Length: 325
Image 1: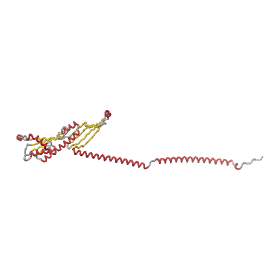
Image 2: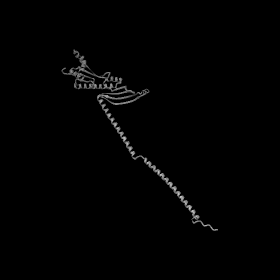
Image 3: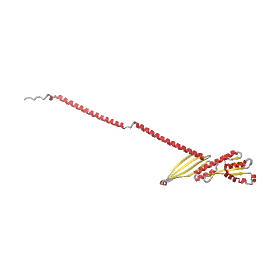
Image 4: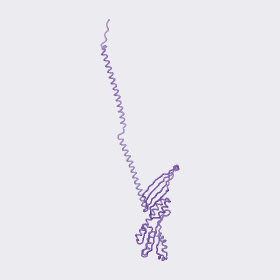
């Protein structure tokens, strides 16, 4: 028998060498696997970083413009300044209107002599079911004021009821109280009571104005004749007196007395009323055959209608006190 040839040299590998080859290849596979895992981890981290960067970019894009806040603040300041300007303009208009009202009030005070020092007002709405259904509104105004008309001071308290409906608005004085400071003018007490009873404010102010005007005129007239004829004219109560005496320096006991009253009639009209009283010695009355002294008051009223107050008083003084008479 012939022995078989050995296998080729390439196929003939020692057992130890083949085992080593297998070990080296496993290590390579393990290392490759480790590198793959590391790459996957890097890719994941990269993707996470990219996602974070993308999120940050988006956030940066969505952030407001840094100048936007400044613009908004400027706009707010502009609006505030504009509103303040409008407020100042309104305040200027108010001051202008107030100044106009004050000038009108000053004109009226100068014209009428009536000055209002203090004033207050309270308003009260009066409502009930019936007025609500009919659409009627009632407002009660309570007023209080104090003032003066030349030398006369007064205090007023009155109520005004205002009625409003769909068609019209009406108002009326429901209560009036007048308090006058004590004066020497007895004519005013009856007039004040009448004004309160009628609740007529217009009549009160109008009549008070003309009453004071007549009082001032009487005072000036008496003062004028007292200064012009100091030895003849006598005022028992000073310049504010309602009586003026005319005494003859050459005829003792002979005197003419002018009584000047100021009356206010039922309608509030102010009228002066002058009367002449005589004081004559009995002997002179017996010698008065023509009844001159008796008819003197009537002649005096006739002179008033013809000459007026000042000229009539002047003629009386001259007729009684001139040296010729």
